[in-house]
Length: 311
Image (tube, rainbow, N blue to C red):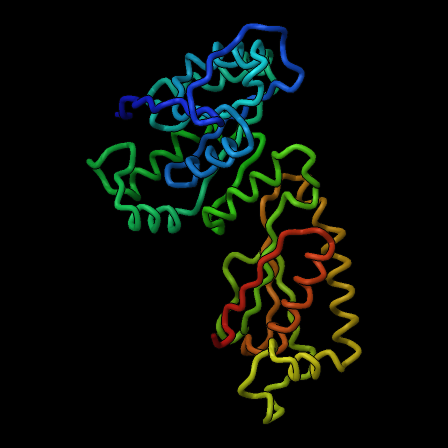
């Protein structure tokens, strides 16, 4: 049985309840509905929209969404609105697809669906020690499975699906801010992770693209470089001294700059690019650093992870 709904307070961007004022429909009216898995970051997402100036509501009853949309359209004070609807709504959540269809006739509406891997969600529940909203009568893992099944139809209706497995709170909020703030550049709607790794330690499980840089001469066989990493200036200079290194960096960077807008257009929220050498200490580290600099220069948000390099 699904839980009874608990209604939380309405939050106004200025920190106080807002009162809708009837007027002509506002040209910038917009409604964002945030939904998805419990523990996937919906509260952080709502906070990001609040910071952007949206009028935000957590867990609005679905039967009130059409009225809420009408008020947003008529109001000159709260044209940009965001609300969270999730499994706490209980059985009424089944009516959301039909309600969404009618609401889209009233106001431009986007549905954002947040999800994460079971492993990530279980870890978050373990860290916060909070019960799953479906109750404590079963394990969290079983509740997550039931929740996924219950939200399957709604997920298919989403305009944007964001897997927050790889996002921390700050990265999620930054991603949403970049995507929804006015005049945001299209280059800022994806988070790129450049990961260096060693093949002898296995491939990164979450890599979308993997490039093997073992064709480059290995600094490991130069005694003075063996204890250093690709971040050391002398090691990096050695690797760059080979013409194939610079050509590889140029070609890969150009290809990624070409590909990223297409990934963005398809709604991809992040891209993880793996660069692998034998041990993950020299070549892959230097290449990941150089490619990440190229992508930042092209206007993308990039983080670098050296998975197997000594700390």
